[in-house]
Structure formats: C-alpha cells, structure tokens
Image 1 (cartoon, rainbow, N blue to C red):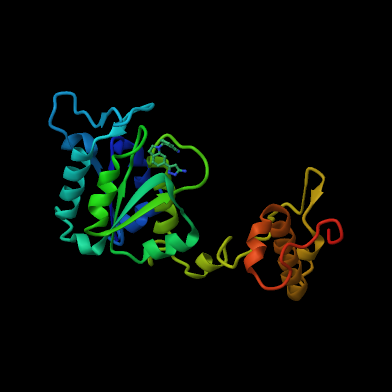
Image 2: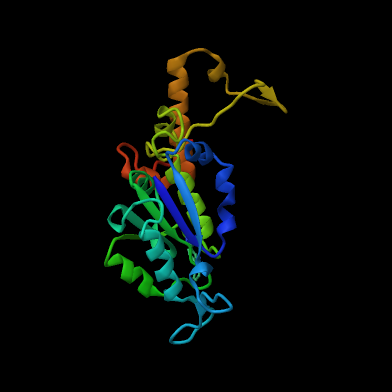
Length: 247
Ligand code: JEW
C-alpha cells in the first residue's frame, strides 16, 4: 500500500518511522510519503490561507495549493499509481465518523491520499473537484474538536496499517480484539497473582478452560452493557439489559 500525506506539518509524521508500521515499510509492504503543502505555493510568504467569503471567524485554506499538491501526488511521482487506484481521505469534523469497518475497507486499497486541513478547513471546492474525478472520503475521527487533520490521520493510519496483510505477524490477533465481534474485550491480568491487595480472579488460575471462557464472555457482556450499551442494540439476545436486576 502507498500512503501520501499532504500537510503544512510534515514533521508531525516523523514518528511513523519509529512505530509498528516501520517494519512493514522496511519490508516494502507499505510506503508512506509526506508532502509539504507550502511547497505548492508561489508567493514569498508561502500563503496557504485566506479570509472566508461571506465573513466569519478564522481563515480558510486556499484551493490552489491543494490542487497543485494533490495533482502532483496523483501524477504518481515514483509510485506509478494513478487517480483511479487512489482514495482521497479528507479528515473533517463534518465527515462520516471513522469506524473499524472503514479501517478494513481502506486497508484493502492500493493507494490512500490524506489531505490534512488546518484553520477553519479547506475551501469546499477542493472536495468537489476531486470527488468528480476519484473516490473521496470526508471522514471525522469522532465527535470532539481537534485543531486540524493531522491527529485524525495519524489515528487512521495506525488503524488501517495494522490491517494490511504482513504488517503484523499473527492474523488471529486481528480478529479477537475490541469492536471486531461487537463486544468490548474481557479484562486481562498477568503476574503477580496478588498486587497491592488485589487478587487476579481465581477462575483464571483454575485451569478450567470452559469456566475461563464463560467468565470472560460474561465480563464482556457486563462491560459492554455498563460502558457501551449502544453496541448491544445491534446484537442478538439482550438489547440493553438492566444493571439493577442483572449486576
Ligand atoms: C478535523 C480537519 C481542519 C476533527 C475531528 N474539530 C474541528 C473544527 C476545526 C475547524 C473548524 C470547525 C471545527 C478544526 N479543523 C479540523 C478538524 C479535521 C480539520 C480544521 C477533525 N476529526 N477530524 N473530530
């Protein structure tokens, strides 16, 4: 998979060299390149923003540097990929919320391009222009305020990258984790068996594998009901439950 990131803060992504994804990059499974949006300006001050038409607070990112930067990435450079093979992901607070299903979909792609906005966001015509030519996904990381797209892109790359075949060794470890089966994970413990007066649940030391599996499933059910009841709505069986009568 090829990943291109356009941003005014390319060094923000330096940490990707140190992460889990670093090994996949070394193995040639994943290549990540950043592109400084300011390199696609032509004025002395390398201006990427301007005041909003219609008035209002803050500044909006100008469309021309975005057009030049994205056309440069789509022209392929060294990658040899074309627009038809690429998905343009635009983090935005007004996008669809990013989910594990999105991570799986995007992990199957050959080429992802991430456009990191700042200020009040990017002139809407950039989305419109590229949506008429390729697949564009306006995506929000969640219902909270961020200062720009970079943190959202970092989270998405981590979620997507670990699903790309070859990025982590054991495929079984991918399916067992939170959100893949609709329930939260059960709690985990390791040695020592007693720590600061807190004991590991004795069933986990019993060697009774059926009892352990049943206990873990019950923990998943109770945790999900208490912390994320909305996840139960789409599952068969109890839709919600009652924590007063079913502790
Ligand atoms: C995200 C790109 C670019 C947030 C989440 N938040 C917010 C917000 C911003 C400007 C105007 C209005 C609201 C900040 N911002 C971004 C925020 C993506 C930009 C500017 C973002 N996912 N992605 N939850």
